[in-house]
Length: 407
View 1 (cartoon, rainbow, N blue to C red):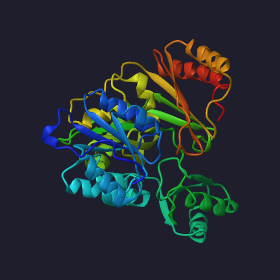
View 2: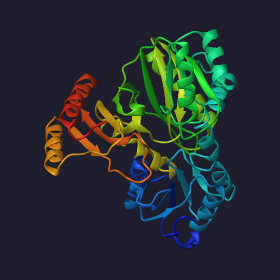
View 3: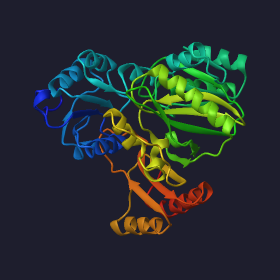
View 4: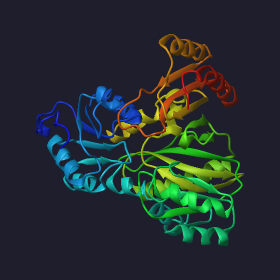
């Protein structure tokens, strides 16, 4: 064990509060810890690094190798949680299965945690078993196989790791010389797997995330669709622009909800699922799925009555939810290889200029151990009477914050 257990294994019947263990205490994990705590639960934040952001927010914390099945199983047994919430992709699924077998409520569930990372299993489920519309796709186990697929399918192609979170290790093939670099990028990411997904690039109008809540009684709730677009290749340092609601036809909304309902129900469990979709006119294609609150949903910190973390916490604890959007909103999530810099007066000046924009807000993420090379630096948020005005306000904020955020 890399850290002492801060909470002794107690008798569940003696507790005055539900004990929730959150696995993963990074930037988003810390938001989730806060949302659970404000509902009265006792929260233990567990991370692989000491000093993770969620450690400072939780009632107690522990440090453990989350990818080590034996270590994680032992820790969960010692902490004896009522609810176990997964807020990271780096987790030993075997430990989650063992916890479920012991009667612990795992959120979303062990199966979802596994499927949410395995693009091959996910795509087979979506396309082959459920018959959901997807763009043409293939899988390759070597650079040679990828080259053969490209020759057969033609260019351009999008290449993604089979085991990874959305946006990680992706490349676009435009010519044969791109094959080898794309292969190396896809298999050298944190989730090394010598297999990749290749997709045809289709002409679409926009991409969106449909946050879909599944409760303990299998009821589904949908948030207003969230549009998003990368700026300057955000996965490697840059900006992810998001806005809510994404304008689309009623036919496309109905198709999006139908796809989301089918894939989320196939996963099972409870929680917030981020269903990634491609839209062209009234046609909607399934693209990907995340099984926990993610970066696209950060816009809900200002656009909805309950943000994605509060919704996830409520569903996990079996509490009522609503997905009311109180205002159109927009956000820009900034990524980079260094934390915010500059002297104190420069930081204050940049923040003051950004926050002079009407209906604006800023979240700055501190540097912390274990952060990825291209980490979140912060997020600018704004609301407005309509989406176009909200997006314009966020762009004004980003201009002011350039001295603070150096992606």
